[in-house]
Image (cartoon, rainbow, N blue to C red; front, side, top):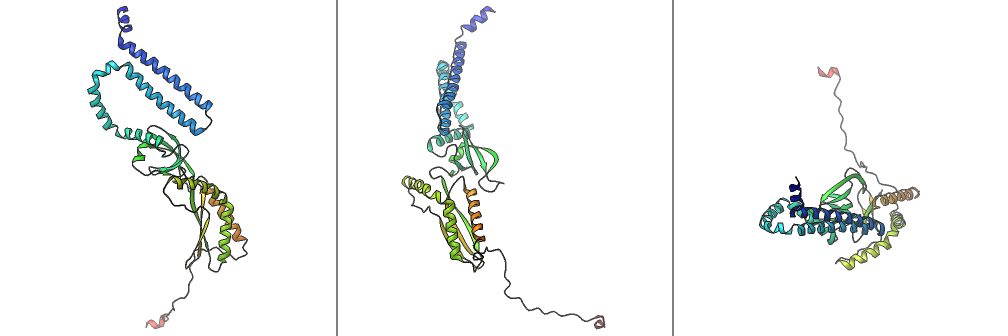
Amino acid sequence: MEETIQRWLFDPMVGKMVAAAVSLTVLYLAVRFLHRSIGRYIADGDARYRARKITSFLGYLVGIAVLATVFSDRLTGLTVAFGVAGAGIAFALQEVIASIAGWVAVSFGNFFRPGDRVQLGGIKGDVIDIGMLRTTVMELGEWVNGDLYNGRIVRIANSFVFKEPVFNYSADFPFLWDEVALRLKHGSDWKLAKVMIEKVLEEIVGEYTTQSKNAWKDVVRKYRIEDARVEPTVTLQATENWIEFTGRYIVDYQRRRITRDLIFTRLLEEVDNSNGRIIWAVGSFELVAAPALDVRLSGGPSSAH
């Protein structure tokens, strides 16, 4: 029994395993300590999140380097076998490798970051976490109307950044253009209606004009794109059924639904205060002329004989 114990104690492989275990334990504790220090000294949430992710990634790299160093003499004779096995593993895990490559692209390619509103892989939502294999999104829409959370948390493989377009609602320009349509009955005071809509838009979304101007100037400097108009605009179109106004405006991407509610509330108030000069149009049909009716009644019972 003593000889067996001595043989285990002086076995180089056992020593390497113990050294590897001790090194990995120390590394794990160091990473945990760094995570706590990051949470204590970095106040910004985005910077704190990125620092923790980078620390974890570096910890994995250091752990792999430690294992490779400790067992380096054992690995030299298995180089060819590892090469063949690595090719097979790479083929079998190509989706995993693509997801890791996608994570690198997302982390350093400015695709999106936690807190951004994106559409990725057909899913629209807010990014709440970016892992090495999957991006976690709090989903918007589906059975819920408007840009509201539906409660589902979706995990999307990072490889999708190479396969499908990535729609980012809040990257370089955290505003969206939106529109509201107002249909009025023919005979309404359309000049008054246009002034009314312009006033309401300026009242509700005017604060976004200055902010969006500065943000759009940065976009124009960064990309080859025209200098678009960010002020609210109102356009008019007359049809057989009604007079239709379209109000176009800039809004914060997170307040699109609530802003539409505020605009329509004010429009309803203004229409009610117009003393009948502005009348909503409704879907109806007007009967202009009716065809002549020729009604013939058959004779009584005696006519049958």
